[in-house]
Length: 307
Length: 272
Image 1: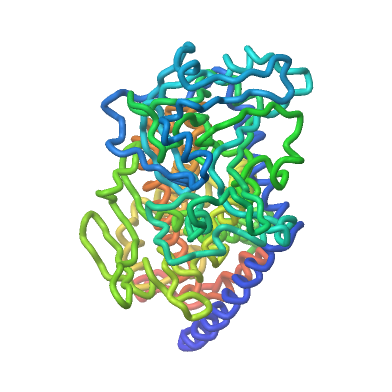
Image 2 (image 1 turned 135 degrees about the vertical axis):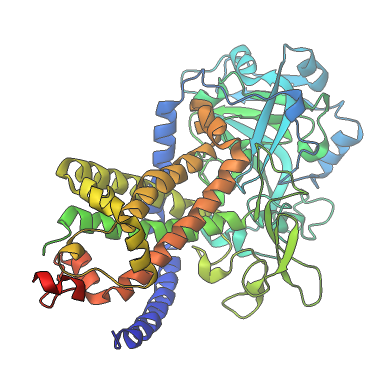
């Protein structure tokens, strides 16, 4: 028995060293392409299994008016800096038009008033952020399925891409082809407390930090990267998938995505595009953005966000 | 004696790696919003638990539990990063995977190892059930239940059984393993699933079970804490009850039983 303490000390020291080495090794492994792809198979499995479990009629839980959160936390972009958007906002989006095009037989565009005149769906649902928090709100909007049916998808149509008004960052021609992983949003902790302020941690810092009024000018040889997101037809035709123009019975506030935002109730918040300007129906999203299917996906987040 | 069959040994070590990665990547995910609530939604002003840093100069790390504030500078809320600069985060870099603030990286690790954990656990349970191993490992024998009090005393005084008695797990050991295997780990998996909006649509009862998504997140965090406690006690007892013998048992399967050559207690002497 008397030898055990010394062994224990030895072991403790050895395991501390081993732990530190292992940690460093894990971090390095996480940056190796094949290993990163292997890890991502866990998220592929999530999608595979959840799609098996969900039918098109599986609805996200809906709540009562009493459950509505007193404050619906906005996240991501809260006030798009873009000149064109600001001009629209100044006139209360009277000049706004939603365009629907791409692989459709009958492309069309609708003003906000026209959208509001269409049959609508109102639902009280829970919004889950990838960071971990949740809010409940009441959304009113046009079912996406109705718009897609009206536009009549071509046989090659597979994904619905939402092009949004808000600039997320400037792509420098020098950095344009960079692997998104080298520009991880989390790599830039600017001292902001991640608690309750920002979405995919720290990512917004880049966007908000001194970009000035108009990020869309491109005067300095950079092109703005505006938010985009894509969903497949399974989610697009789900009855709870709507383009919402009202939150809790009021006009959708700018912070929550005015004039029009996507609600995709069986997914995390980062899929639910705000400030939607144009809907493009495509066969593949490989040529859009950096090819991963959305702004956050290009930053490393999974395309499927059901968990 | 040959104590641990190959399947048990392999699943044990795979499980150990899974739990460690799940814990550290879980803390990484927690750091993205280091606050816990009860119910379906986040009541941002009144979290059950929150880890923040203050605006003071120099800033302090503060952990708030049920409205009571504790200064936890250096560990929770504010700690020192690898480069020596203060890191403004809930759990410190050495406790999270990846070390840097990286939610998407943490999620990738967490989901991959969650699948590994579940598949490995199922393999263990199926093997354990069909081989009869599980029964002997977690269900106390009648005489063990009768001598429950004595077993507690032995534990508290760190006297470990020898001879015949060392061939089987003691009653507290069995009950603890049963609690971990059939309560904590399943609850942990279900609470994890209850946080998924897609799983909520497929199985709404998950939300009922945990009284809401934010409570499921709180339970997931609390059970992770209990599992850490279990592992700490487990490792401490492994070390105290003969580290090398225990390690040999779980690596090669062979475990040395010290024979009771001398009578175990003077009370038995007259009979001998």
